[in-house]
Length: 141
Ligand SMILES: Cc1cc2nc3c(=O)[nH]c(=O)nc-3n(C[C@H](O)[C@H](O)[C@H](O)COP(=O)(O)O)c2cc1C
Image (cartoon, rainbow, N blue to C red; front, side, top):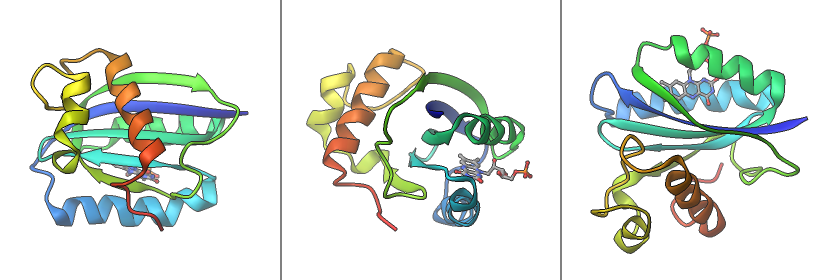
């Protein structure tokens, strides 16, 4: 059974290039074994991650993520059973939130900034869906 889980969190230290690369390199090593796909969106201070895969595998990864001290204030934005993946080509894509087209951000926010702690879960999920359909900003493996 496939599920999609979306959460947001705050980076404990500024999300430098080194931090993102170290997270992504372990994700890209581990996710294929677990059949996990998805995308990690990040700014200097915030992560939003989409995880897709089998229910047990996604649940286990989320449990590990909750214990990971590199971030905090983890909030669950969406958890649903799905018929198909949106990110089947990405072991873990990446999107820099500050590279997203401003008009797309304005569509879902008050001031053109993605802050999942301020906008509704629906807005964040809708924005991610739109990004997935254009996929213009994600890094494909
Ligand atoms: C923002 C963020 C995203 C992460 N994404 C993944 C991921 O997609 N896959 C993964 O295996 N670990 C990911 N990790 C690392 C996990 O939190 C955890 O360190 C790793 O799965 C090892 O967990 P374990 O020590 O419980 O086995 C991420 C960590 C952070 C902070």
